[in-house]
Amino acid sequence: MKRLPRWVLLALLAGTGSGLAFAQGAHDHGHGGHAGHDHAHDHGHDHAHGHGAGVGGELPRVEAEVRRVNTRANTLSVRHGDIPNLDMPPMTMTFQVQDPALLEGLEVGDSILVTVERIDGAYTVMSVEPAP
Image 1: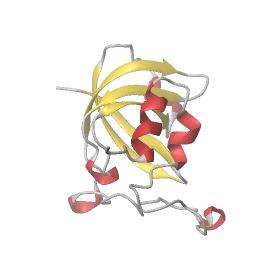
Image 2 (image 1 turned 60 degrees about the vertical axis):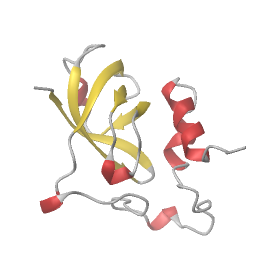
Image 3 (image 1 turned 180 degrees about the vertical axis):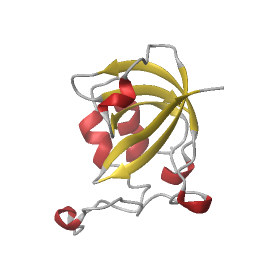
Image 4 (image 1 turned 30 degrees about the horizontal axis):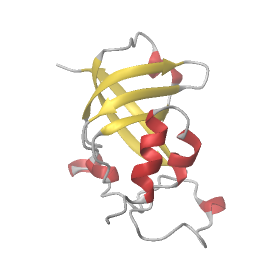
């Protein structure tokens, strides 16, 4: 019987809003845990498990649908397409936002394009724009 990777199970929990804290640090792609990795010196962007930014250092814009906006927690829940720089398949997930202003004007059901990066272990929305 095949087992799902731990990050898939945790990401599914994050989509329900109950597993956000676990999903942010558990994206290990089956390469083992983060034992021995010193996050105290992790001051920049964490691309260790992703493919990095695209050509010219730009992050890929990903199609998404707004599922929930939480201005108190500065989080955005979306159903998103593939996020190639994070090697993340399509799913529904809650993300931190880099700037709370990114949440302004967003409503459940909006079609948007987002860029997402892993910063200090947290999956973070870096930009939001309306989908064409």
